[in-house]
View 1 (cartoon, rainbow, N blue to C red):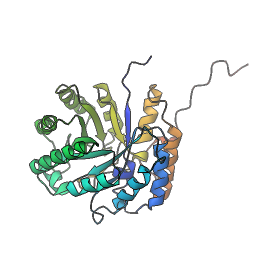
View 2 (tube, one colour):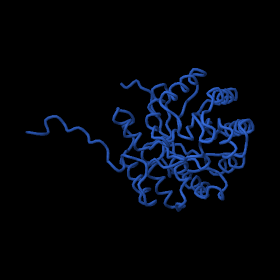
View 3 (cartoon, rainbow, N blue to C red):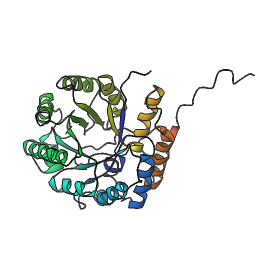
View 4 (cartoon, helix red, strand yellow):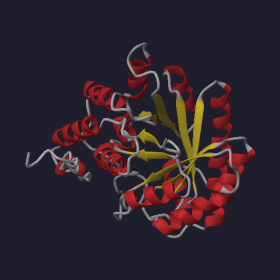
Length: 313
């Protein structure tokens, strides 16, 4: 029996993946992609974010997507629908249309915080903690994150003490589903192991998630570093889509099918349908009319070894 902890996969392509794209994807096509992602065996799917449609037009149909998939029979029972919110109005919208888990965060970079939310870190932290408590009181799950946790495209190095302080405020508020987001893609495996090891020691009740961008080619390596020290939930985007529109150099997310392929080669998450993820990745690339950052959707998976005795008989 495998004693290793179960690793959870949080697919964020329909939100973080598409928010940088200039060509708006029709809602019906998003629904088709979401159906395939929901049926692939991943554990959570982020359908959208509740932001101003003028600022992020790709997310204008988020309410409609949640309403569609919240109807009975439209998603596997075990899969959680998540949505990103930045403010109280977004939270109200999400509560009204069926978000099961709210994702919200505070940037550890003052510059990024102001560009992303229009608020300084202190104000953003206070409001996010209040929103998280409201969502929990409404019976929803909540994941809070520290964004730009490993560095900022505008400010460079982000002090670890600042990240620890924000995490401390979450813990004081009783929040135990936490994430670090490498918004600018500055993380390295050593930095990931060091910071997560420090944070995991603060409270054993916390369920930790990681969110890495592949701006400088280290997203998959950073996922493995996080896994080594005890992180169990991994956010990734089909075909490696994505990027934060409010950081200096935007790069795509860790690629879902590449991460699943790597895990499965290590004997982890064999239940996930890699073929379904590859199918969505190819459809997204075709729709956008360009090659995307994912590798396995282009190369194909490593072939399974031939059964002993199959040849030469």
